[in-house]
Length: 160
Ligand code: THU
Image (tube, rainbow, N blue to C red; front, side, top):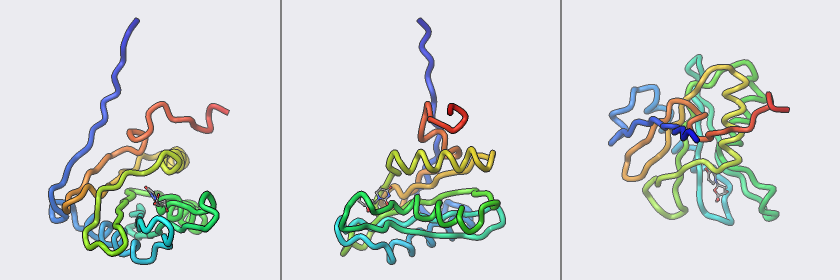
């Protein structure tokens, strides 16, 4: 039997200043988006922002519902709305951040499995990898250059 390893590569940035200017703006947009999250049940405000190939930035946040499963994560909110309105524009980077209601510091957050699946499909759709930046707590950030690295052995439409 042969064992194969998948190595995930990522970079750690110890402060926002270490990121390029374009990505600093993306971080700011995602952080700003947490302010409009509708999260009365979890009180966990998530913001997500997309940097597009033409430099535009779009943002979204989590939208909860009293029928809990009807709500949607920030990542899928921004991915679906952007794909609905700009279907041919390619994504360069998605940034994800979170903050608890009443707190002043953004905290580490990683996307749920359903969002990873959706992120992965949009990468397949545009036939070009895009990066993921995650808030990592204490003003630090993690960058993963390819969405696929967050979902090994991904299920995709070509298996249907
Ligand atoms: N949530 C997101 O929006 N994105 C994530 O990556 C993790 C979880 C939301 C869903 C729900 O509104 C709240 O955070 C608590 O799970």
